[in-house]
Length: 249
Image (tube, rainbow, N blue to C red; front, side):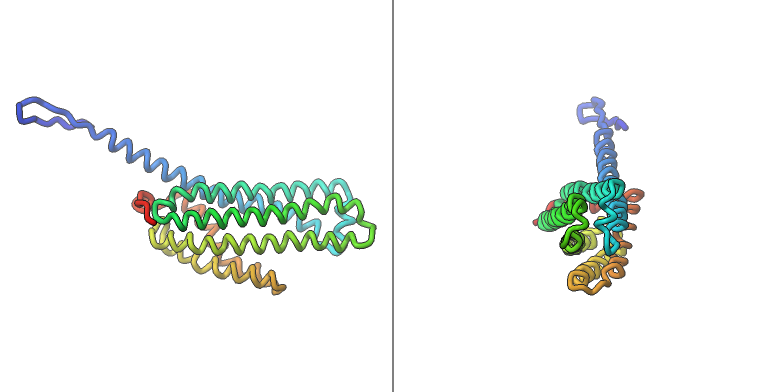
């Protein structure tokens, strides 16, 4: 839009508000793009790791799984499952990287802490996937003494690495949700669900590591946050006013 005004010397001047409007539109587009990308990554992470873990568990859940995995078809399924689990590494790192410039506007410490815990998580999950892949060559020695025991150790290594990775990201996500609550980047009721869910998740991982198998039930509150958040980001995005926040220490 162009406004016409009369200057003091009687000349006509024009002022254009188009750049300001264009800047506002660009900011809104950037906000929704980042929101939808982060939301999509949450869902992709669920899909890739969940499907991959399901494929692997279907093979290593039995008491004599090495004999089953000795078959070429089973080895292929195990490798595909492990590969899908490993894809989650890139997805989680991408979440931390995309979140960083948004969180940094409000707290650099929280942005760095969340990114750091995501990196710790993916390193631990990758160790677990590597342990699963070592089962493939081990399966060729399924009939030898001690092979099944070693295979069970590799399976347990993956399980422990997973629990420790989830513990790390759970701690980081608590700080994330505190910032989301304070800044209102998302509705406070959603941030509160994360503040409840992630400490419960951490407690569940600790219980699993000590042999108390209640972790699956304790993931439910955190699962609510991680399922609702991506849909909120995809359709609503981060709150516009909070998205433009100024950097803080």
